[in-house]
Length: 174
Image (cartoon, rainbow, N blue to C red; front, side):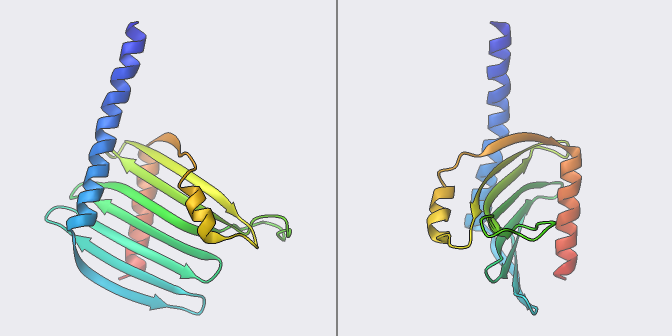
């Protein structure tokens, strides 16, 4: 019985900080003011960069639009001390070490939500659907909404990788 109660207590406490992160994301999305916006073009596609701010939080949004292969939207949410969330959604190309066969997917539709409670504790939620040559992307997007997230606990190494990724993206867009 004690074991059962401790599991319920653990799940409730974990759920509370996740709810708090999701409320912060919603608040930033609704209340932040656009501070910086620009577009970069290269031979293969476009990158759109937007930075939003509130009093204490920042949202950095990057969209990569590269024709049929890639259409990814990434958002980083941070406060003064922590990148507390990354949300990635869109179509990403699959890279094969050999030539891709016609019956294999060329991309995946993904939705990934990474939340951090602090620099050593977090979760990653991921769902995806394979995209084939003749796939109806809009239909797949609605199907993706019905796919259940796979959730895993993550830690300090993942936070460090996220921070490095965020810093690389910021430098590319300066």
